[in-house]
Length: 323
Image 1 (cartoon, rainbow, N blue to C red):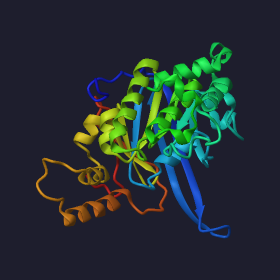
Image 2: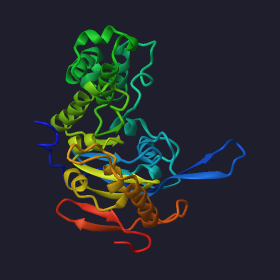
Image 3: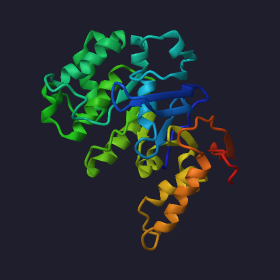
Image 4: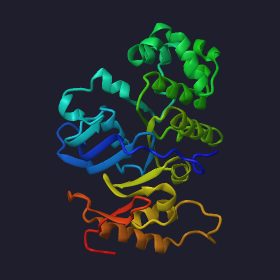
């Protein structure tokens, strides 16, 4: 069945807990003092065996959050808790090899994430040799072939170079490389956005199957609301570095409360909607979003209000008390 119709119920144990994560970038050159707040006190929780989608427009902070969890960016404040351990406190300077094995990332660009001078065998076996179990390290090529079978490729691909593969095949190799580390959490940063539409559903089905078969947790970063609804158990909406609404995907995207989520959904093609969406109404919705969130550069703790406890649906409280 598709991930929408049958989803694994996550355990109460958290695979990842992010608390109050903040990140600011300096833009405009070496002498510039202009700051951009990419993350503003973000909280996020992913249960074991759960897929959580992080959605929002470009610049909302989705990928920055994933890169901070992967320890590719250093947040200024907050906590990243994995296995009950605050890794920003215990591994201050850089992530340990053990952490790199537990948390793996699949990047957006399958053409740039694989070294073109190495065969696929090296790409996958390197992950196995660094992070795999002792049994897997005894015969890394055999393990690599097994991983390729898992992602829908046969062992003959081990002897090929990345330029000999299509975009979808390269992304499958990237997923196999991540699985070689036997992670408990995969950070999938828009893994289908650079692929042909015809192969995207295959990657989504693969991620859903891997969760069902291995119990791995997945943070799925995307701007595609349809794929979030299809794949993810829960969806969290981000805007200007803040998490503004979250809950079970079907419930949240079926009946959004926050005006920004409503604005995103209004841009999604809907065969049941007659005509194009009213641009005047869209402008009104954008102004409502600005009133709801307050000034762009004003830091503010996001206060959550429960909409529906059953579906875990919550929404950020408006700044000026709008209902």
